[in-house]
Length: 125
Image (cartoon, rainbow, N blue to C red; front, side, top):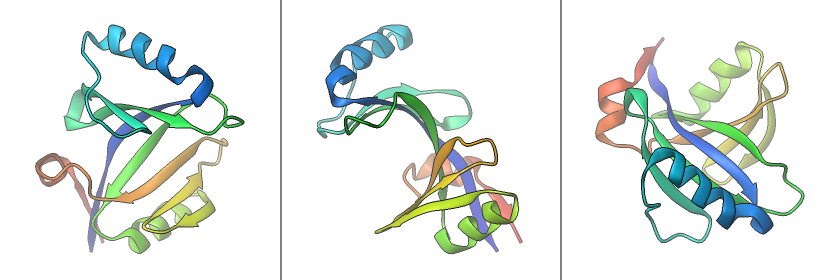
């Protein structure tokens, strides 16, 4: 048995456009971006306790929105979503990049939101 939930919605932009896009989405949310990482900035909470973030990607990665599914058992959650039709694109140290049947990229990651995970996670057999 394990638990998971969609914990993060990430707005990805290549480095060349990231600052302008970050400013735009912060304005949409009515927030000041927070965080000090060079790759990520938080844009606040959205429904269901999920977080909205902006991620700077490498040039050559198209602008996109992707989801992070956080889980307390990475292997079990990857197996579950693969069973639903996902394809593993890349296994990284500590998380997995996958693609849904329609071609959208998403990640399965360890728990990142603490209390929100405890409050909103679903339990799977």
